[in-house]
Length: 435
Image (cartoon, rainbow, N blue to C red; front, side, top):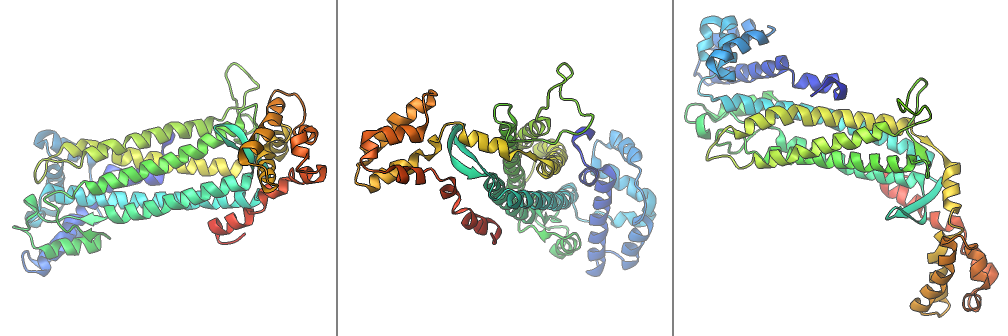
């Protein structure tokens, strides 16, 4: 995590003070459950909350202890005992370090998912607004980067809305899958701790009890979580790439907002570069790159090892903080995106009507011409237009094979732009439930 690409709310989830607070709550809730089933005195469980429930943990002190113990959980428990005193002997009864670490990570990832879901909601709202704003703003659709047939800019935004709606559902599913608690002791057999303790802690921490934890929560859950973040990041990149293309000088159908005083280049004062969407492309690569080590963490030795630990200490904060920032940045780009309908129309007209070629092809087949011959008739008139040698409609009218089947009036009707937009309402109803 670096401040340049971080937002405070997500960063706070991964702050050491937050982590130690979650560790304490796990331990204290476990003590409550142990007291309820008669393993430790109820007065001791109460004292643990009273003496440490509102303290600010000394991170430097914990680090100091860890330099000696070489064990982070023991360092924390030692520091905790400094607040609690004699009753601290009941803390961590029958538990192992992974009970604390894995349950804490689940809480952090669940909270991170909540923020990411809210981020997507904000993005969806922005996309919906722009979609309806430009629902019938015609522009050229492209395949292979080449002019194809007309679409609308609103449809581009609607497509992105549908995609991020799927992203939202994936995040909801990932949030549910990752939100499990393990308080099962060494190698996960509950030999030294009652399963009722795990159930109690899970309920208090807003989690589900892990069915079988082997000492660690199975890492296929984490792999799915980070893979989901990678998919969301890929959707961010797809939309960012679309905007980058639309901002190219030769296209200029839309561009990022350029604020007063902003500079595009240290050398060329005229430049207005798509720096935000280029940045989003890079951030997406980083988030995606963190999915693979999460998948490699699935294969741990026997009941546990800690080869996953160093990976998760890095990708947990980095992936969620980076994606949070990227989603917020993309929302801002969409909200402030400058759209140029007049340039869209110019680009639509740029190929002299070639975008209507399929309509002519189909019309000829409806008049009894074979598809192969119809294709040849249309293509031989289209190719000169590509070379700048005439107007498509004019050439078609002069073609004896075409004019033998289609009158001038019929050909002119085939060049109606509105024909391509007649199902926009249908698509909008599918995406938004209303047109």
